[in-house]
Length: 503
Image (tube, rainbow, N blue to C red):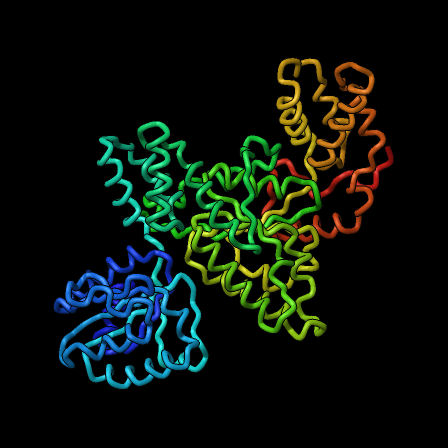
């Protein structure tokens, strides 16, 4: 049921007080005006604390700076006169005993009259003693079609147009923003270069970043990582590239659901976090990073409230990528009795949302220790796929060395024996390969020369890779993946490595 259908049903059912939490006053008032017209041209009276009632010449200014008088105005109209009274920011006065009493008295009368009070507020604050009296109605952010119409209107005003693919991408990027924010960011683009361009997606993402900065739960994680920056992991990259257009309206028309997310399992340093960053950048979606530890608060009920707030914020900014790093550490305490069940309730809310969400929030969770994850997390339906990210093969190490050296020394890449480097670094993860190159650069820099292949090999010889210090954990993960519990991220991955070899 749409907002207007639900609102009109409440009005026809004579619900006396309707509370709509939204910051989009202009848009919601327009929607209410359309509903009032369809309901038989009901009168609309709008009040705020500074200007009082507005619009009607006979009543303009009535109730200025007097919220009690604003409620008394309702009784001035004839009993049988259908009307909707919009009270802006009225939540600030609900704790006043005279206002609360007047609302109760009015609600009794309005049950038999074609009149409704509508409270508009950017936040939801209802005193417990009025909770039975007030009905809350959510006003959603603009849907894709409404955004498309607004963008088309703005483009028409400047005499410019976008091809269908670019328009679809701009619309997708604007989802999660209010109409006012969309107008502002597109006006900024037009002021910058006289038109809206496909690359203005970055301006839109910056606008979303402003919204995220207002919360202490999620971080907006800017990234320039490309899919091509990931060395190896060809199976995983193919899987992601096939879903590059899955957030588009064309995909919805085709009947495709929104992609749900990925769980990436493997030891540290194998490219799991880099993959999350590359997904967001490649799909032109904002990357939100959740530190699960921030969900847990000291007050009773605070953790559950923060979890719901996190979900609401992520969905408001959708389509987006929600990155949860090391989720195994976050929920390893589920089932313990030491926190009065808080971890269990937070976990329950979270996995229920994972299973039932319909919003385009693509969740990328990474885990190093699969044994620490509750079994419910691994059940089908939570994620689209679970990938095992193992240690890179020799061919993948070649690709990883190539990526880093191309970025650092593209002008003399031929001076490095990448084949030898890949061969001489068995069991090294991607992060450890990057660290050997950095150490080699320190060697070269300290001797006032460029670093060489031998410097990299020297740095590698002094490093003990994690694969040799966490052999039991890696063997467990390999056995777990070999049992068919996860797809292999790499085409070349062998589930038997050289762990334990002597060098």
